[in-house]
Amino acid sequence: MSADKGWWVPAKGEDSVSERLLRKTRESPLVPIGLGGCLVVAAYRIYRLKARGSTKMSIHLIHTRVAAQACAGPCTRCTETTSREQHRTRGTSRFPQPRAVRPSRRALTCS
View 1 (cartoon, rainbow, N blue to C red):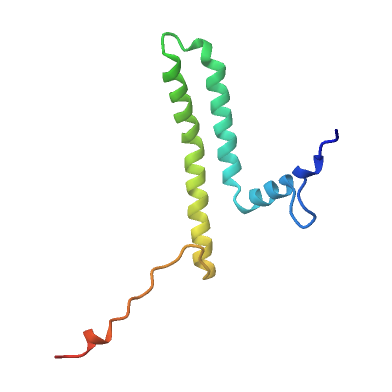
View 2 (view 1 turned 30 degrees about the vertical axis):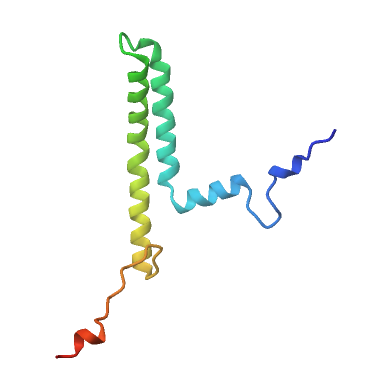
């Protein structure tokens, strides 16, 4: 029985996973930095698991998650802010602006 091993390979016109990752890294370099910081903090806290003392396991894991998110969150927010500023200066926006509401004809007529 032969398995179809071509199902995970991208089509000829599509980027591979590594090419897509490199392109996304060039577009927003802070996101991989934030993810790297997240992984480093999580790895360190898991390494320090034996020295947690009398702290419950669940509390230690919650603290690990919060510390890892504290590294990734600001990097993601800075990337979003930078992206908004770049689109605003170019005149194109991914984020829709509210439209001006025109008054109706009834509001213009005096009765």
